Image (cartoon, rainbow, N blue to C red):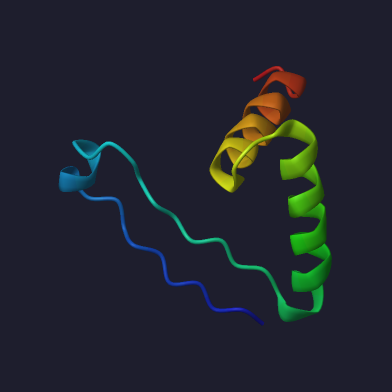
Length: 65
């Protein structure tokens, strides 16, 4: 099982321009996820962060939340 160490969001983080979070992927899925990520980044012309934000927004819209 993977262990994730995340930096807690603090009041000083709110004023920063960006917030950084870690992503944990099990070793058995790492190669597959990296290949998928690179293909999607290439297809959309996005960086990893841009792709992640787009996918989150698309899913949010799809769920009609």
